[in-house]
Length: 127
Image (cartoon, rainbow, N blue to C red):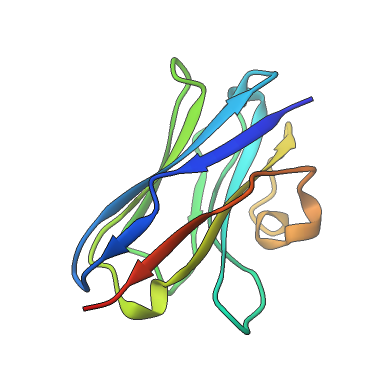
């Protein structure tokens, strides 16, 4: 059973940066595709970025392309989301999710595809 714990959220001014962490336990995160999702108040959860298992195929939503970077550190059993040039519209609760041996650029945007979820971390971009 895989457990995921997000951290690294907080309050940041527009234009600032944050690095979110998704720490895994119970299994090796390298076996899993990982997705980052976010949910703003009153809005549906949306996919932000995803990385396939083993192979470092990465995907980004158009709204974050060029500003966010997803990466894996297998030694730390952690997936990161580096967020730069943050905007107020990036505000929300950020969740990481995992599926065993997932490798689908289409499915990685679908929340229902994933089997494991973290509890979320709040990101607020405001001056």
